[in-house]
Image (cartoon, rainbow, N blue to C red; front, side):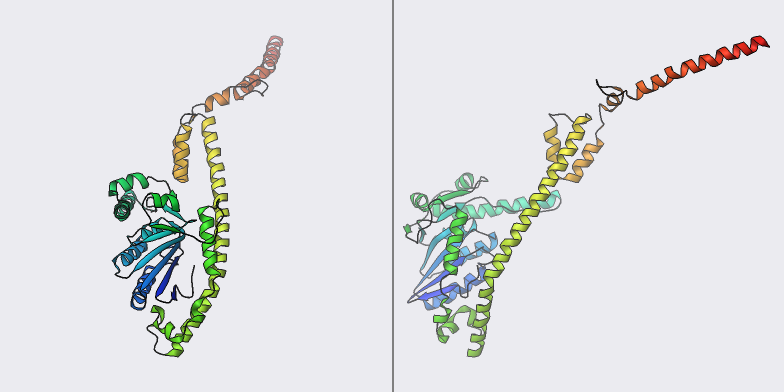
Length: 358
């Protein structure tokens, strides 16, 4: 979620909002610049988090920028700190969670495309990232890297409430916030806090021109007019942010619909192929799951594999006649032969009579 300014100032405290996806709405370069600017102007920096995670490399850059800063930094998880955002939250600085917040730890996920060597490199990169993240978690959790990986990098999303995180020693305290429904899902909590921040008055209008000029985003401006022009530009972008976000949600819904239909069509095609293969004896009930997995992995290759199998019951199906079913090819041919015999016998008798009269 884009804000007009990502920094809010109150007396001697500056607040940086990490609301949104890391590497996208929350850019590592932006956060690093804001940290530097706030460190020069404020006695304390509060970082408020509501993020589902995001890009690992951007997250590591933010983690290092916060951890290595000499400023008095305190972190607050307002809504959700999931995946890479939880690593940042546990960077070693004092951290608290609202009583409605959620923390989530899990293994690195990603994808790649290519041959087996390229996929092996992808796996090696994921394992290397898990080693790095395991060390980051371990420093806060009082565990070894291996213990962290075994307990939390098991392919499961580990969601923790504020109370659970406090009992485990992951956070330093719990603070109050405007109520959120107790049965809210993490997604609903994330949306609730994002909406609250979006609906807060933008404090850019409350800043003086001199205060604006001190912000990291305006330090390269050469005149007051340029500062005002850039501020107006940012305000316009902020106004468009909600529209773009709504459009993005609508596109995601449509994409989900297309994906669901494509999967349903693919499943129907797999069933048709497997039913035909089982009917003509190329596969049986025991081997069917194996071929189904092949089709799921690569439909084109799966079709080739099924086509290469030899039917085992084709001849039997051609010759065998089920009760109540019309004659098969064999029976039909035999019937034709039987029906043709009386005609042949009659011709032979006539031929003998002709010979006798002669």
